[in-house]
Every structure is written in C-alpha cells, then in structure tokens.
Amino acid sequence: MVSVEQWAEIRRMRFVEGLAIREIRRRTGLHGETIRRALSSPAPPRYARGGRPSKLDGFREEVHELLRGDPRIETQRIVELLVEQGYRGGKSITYDYVREVRPFFVDQRSFQRTIYRPGDVLQFDLWQPRREVPVGYGQTRKGYVVVGALGFSRFGAGALVFSKEAPDVLWGMQRCVWRIGALPRRLVVDREGCLHAGGGRPSEEFASLCGQLAVGWRILDPGDCQAKGVVERLQGFMETSFEPGRSFGNELDFQDQLDRWFDQRANVRLHRSLKQRPVDRLEREGLRPLPEPGPNLDRRLVLRVPPQPYVHVDRNDYSLDPRLVGRRVEVRIGQREITAVALGTGELAAKHRRVFAAGQEITDPDHQAALEQLRLARYAGKPSAGEDVEIRDLSVFDRLAEAA
Image (cartoon, rainbow, N blue to C red; front, side, top):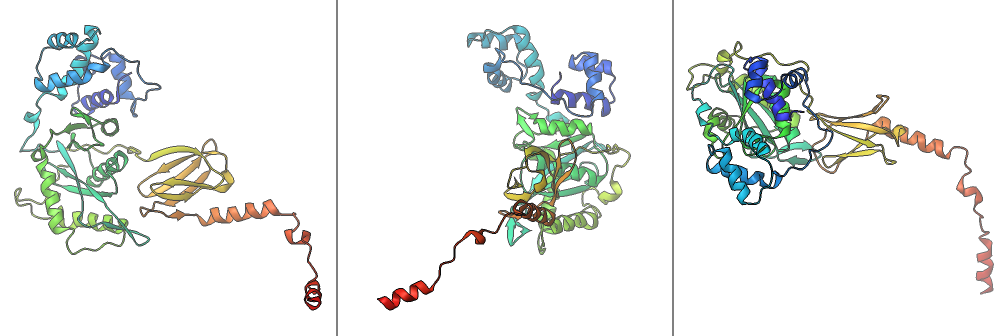
C-alpha cells in the first residue's frame, strides 16, 4: 500500500503534469497496478495498523542530518557511516529510504519564479488581525485569516478561522480555492506546523487535501518568505486597507465584510506592478475546474449519547436528542454547524450553529421539550410524595406552652 504522500504525488503527476502510467512508474519505481489503484481511488489510503518496526528506525534522524550536511552524499557512504554507529540493517531498506527522502533535502530554490505562468501557483499564508473578533455572548476571540493569492494575476481570497490546527487551516485554504473558482497546478505554503511534517515533507492532512484536489505542493525553506512575496504583499494591503476603521458584529459579519473587500477593492484595483486589475488578469484558461463534490474537511467523532445528552466541542456543550441515549452517533464538526447522526438508522441527533464563544451550553428547544416529556413519563402514575407524610397537630405545641 502506498503512503498518502505517494498517493497524492501519483495523482499530481497524472492529473497536473499529464504523465503516462509508464512514466509515473519510471519516476516512482512503483508497480503499474499500484499506480492504477492510486489513480482510481478518490480518497487517501488508510492503514489498518501501523507498520512493523524497522532496524532503520533509530537511525532515520542520522540519515536526515547527513543529507542536510550534503544532500548529494552517496548512499553507500551513508550506509558505511551508519554501520560505524551500530546499524545492523540491510542495504536495501537504507537505499529505499534515502531514495525516498533525498528530494526533500535538495535545494529547490530554482523552482521559485519571479515571473509566474498562468495557473501555476496559489500562495497561502496566515494573517492575524490586530484586534480580536467578536464571537457573541459578550466575548471576543483571537482569529486568523487564511489568505490565498494567485501568482500570475494576484487575484486573492481570504477565510477567517480561529485556530492553526489542520482542519481549520485546510478549511480556510479550500474556501479560498472555491472563492477563486478554479484549481492551480501547485499550492505554495511555508512551514506552518499543521502543514509541514518535518524535513520539507507535507503533513498527512495537507497531502490528503492536495491529493483529493489533484494539485501539487511546494513547502518553502525556513525563513524564505520572499518566495511567497505575492501573498505577503496582499497581507500588507489588508493591514492598511481592510482592518482600519472597521467594526464587526461577529465572525459571520467579519467574513462577509472580508469577501466584499476582496470583490470590491482588492481584486478590482489597478495593481501597481501589473498595471492591470487582478480580476481582468485572472488566468481562467490556465486553471482547472473544481472537483465535484469537494473534499469534506469536517472533523468527525463517534460516541454514545450519555444520560446527560450533550457533546463537548471547542469549549462548549451542544445538546443531543435525549431519545437516543445509549446509542452511537457520529458528530460532524464543521466551521458553521455541529451536526450528529445516529449510526445505522441515520436519524438526526443534533444540528446546531457553531458557537465560537467559550463556556456556553447550547440546547435545542426540541431536545429540551423531549427531556421534559421523558421526565413526566418516568413519574406518571406514581403517588405524590406528600400523601405519605404525616401532618402533626399544631395544637400540641399550644398545650405544651400553657403547661410551661
């Protein structure tokens, strides 16, 4: 079984570069049937269990250090140095591993262009507004804007998120792509923790998104922000033109104003360097159509509905249908909604607007009414507790007082 990264790379070679299966086989060394299975699978591969330990496991970081020192060091020399440190594994697994990781240590700066081809790259970065965003309930929260900009046209888009975790950042990237309305050949990002797995390699979540979109990726070298100067300059424009003098009612109002700013200001201004408007320069012929349906990036978890029917998501509690207590449900955590569906039957267990404030208990009125009905049914037909309690004659206390 191929890794998620290999699966994504195979799909990029086929759908972006248009390579034949024979050429992909020559470049990757994989069997033709393996390549065909990867191309026919729209979803990333899943592993049922972890791989068996390898004798190379304790020496992988040493291999990385040797490649960092000299990316073109001979593999045989790497084997000799590892043996001196106690390595007892075979040469084949070492050769295979070095062949796999060496490309991530070779200087890739020659691929960075100052003149961009139409539809070639879409650069991404995170911008943090100076002020926290109102999220309701009298609270504010630190937000981040995932900013995307096409290299050729400078056409941009942005999406507000509230964390740097992979589901949020990847959702923001997908929303930017959908706002642009087409796919580039490559996504260019820096070494953000949720996108970079180390050594210039993509995280599994980022590779999965690229594979589902059938696009390539480029992870920049540390401190090489100039390689994504297009989006950096767009962020500078946002800091001076979008945020000053604005107020926001909540996160939805922030996103609505941001979308209108891109539509009415950023993408229709006369770009100083291009001498054109980004909307007029948009490379519609160089981009590819969006896939249908798009990737589903909702977080999912499965649980049994507890006796107190609530699920805790991002510092808040959301009610579940109390009639499903004890049954398993799948909770889907999106950027706008929290939904839950009973496994097996598909019954709707919950549907809430997601709240980004903290410490809230969100209860559906229908769920509250169902709780009341269940409580009344539980005590229906039982005698009132007051009928079994003896009532004392208070005149006894009067007589005791007179006798005193």
